[in-house]
Image (cartoon, rainbow, N blue to C red; front, side):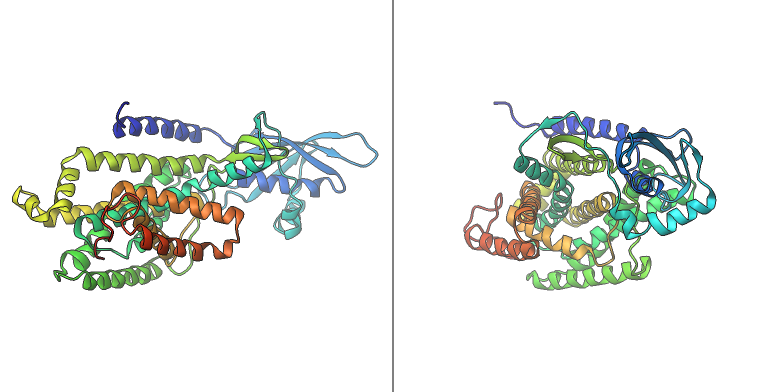
Length: 451
């Protein structure tokens, strides 16, 4: 049996992610713009039954064409189309603002467009009467229960990647120093704020490309997370020399509160949301009219998480930093005798862990649009649970724990009362601490390392 090669898997994943990014670079009808254009159809055809046949690129920039069939009672069906033009595209916040509508009979007047936008499309009635797109896809037909489970699993992929990256941040610090930094949830919020700031810089400079905006946001998130984590960890972990871990733990609680208030003052209490990007559904299978689908942004978010996880495993296994980290985690005194610079290694680990936390915040923004100044707390708490379940201090264990928590939440939300989901997760943590305190891939001793 051949051994698992992280570098080969990393290269294969990078190739798949690159193909997804290239696909995203080409024109893809924006899902939000498509929804707005579809919503206008019942108002343009009062009393008719609307069936959307297909949506395609429009004849002018920032436009799309919706081809549909209007069926009136006691009349033959009419093949019609509408062309909608929008104010912007990409990451622009006003990309869903209609500027022109034209049908096969000609353009709609400005007054009619104004009334259509403000008194129908933006109304609850207009949203409720959206005819939707025709569920017509040449895909595999599967049973209804399988289709539902598959859709729930696909939806959970980004959340699983977020938990796994945050759990790795806890494992990196605890595995090296035996201490827990409770500020990683807030560091994820720092990463999300930096992502929005990077994308805003791209918009302010005249660009609206989602790929460029997310690339700048990613660089900003990684830098901000690494710097904030290294500086904050230096004062709350590196400088706290007490033998007990409690003073350091309390200090990281203070760091968490500081970062939360810091974000509230810097970005204001109002969460800034990025518009959805690459959210057009790709049909994969179907059960009657129900399509099992996957969006490009879900593929990209999950691919980034998998790519970084494989890269981190390779880093810890095949580089001098990884060897130093493992040596110091196994025996700090012996590692120091062999030349490992403990203070420098701790700062490097703090920066790497902060970058992982900030990357998870960037994925939250890419997938869900934004994260408030206090929104990182819940993510950080669940990621800590994932790290404990996987085996606190174990990098592969943290990744496995993130997957386990993500799947647990998905299964519970899909089949059981969602209001009891978090309570069930905390109960599962208690069960693990009783029967498997070392975690899935943690220590084999019957008791965990002291926290």
